[in-house]
Length: 237
Image (cartoon, rainbow, N blue to C red; front, side, top):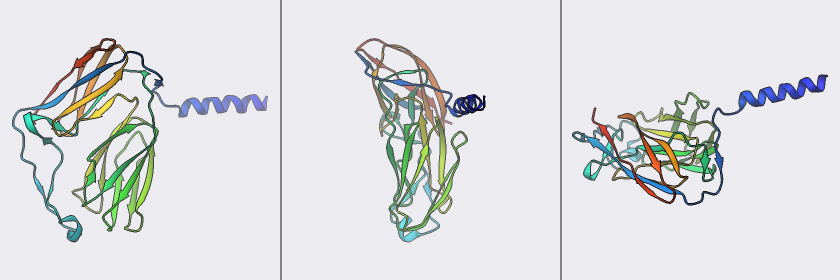
């Protein structure tokens, strides 16, 4: 009886700790592609220069600008995250290690997207004290000092969530982690372009997220072996 109670208790605990999402990865036969751009509707703002107030011998070597909304040629928006929100089966989701660098008192990349279960390797290449502070709500938040002798620290993220990270030592430093529940996501390049490959045929909801302009969704249908164009226009605020 006691053993049965222990087994039941373990099962309940496992269910309670299990993620609310489930994704099954495997081979995709005759998959399709979703490709497009994320563009700004309206006038692109001029990036505001950031005042460097500390550790100028390192941080002020190059000028710093806000990265909240970077708009390139033909109004393409950089660093937007495009993702499929309602897919449960497709190509393998491989969680391993990804890197966030602190270089020149900036986070590189500004937006880091990766699958749940991934360990983020946080590097300090500046030779000064940094402090990385997460504002996660689903994943446990952390606030860790990273002095110059601690070149690398690691944090693992097991649940899907998009959240900001900041450096408490240098107030202008901020970035974003986009933890995903499936492998169908992309961060837009300098031209606002994205591409999702090996998508099983089906009907999907495609969502874009941008830190300043918010979210927008659209429906897409992917034919077997076909290519789908999906563009987003986000209104300036």
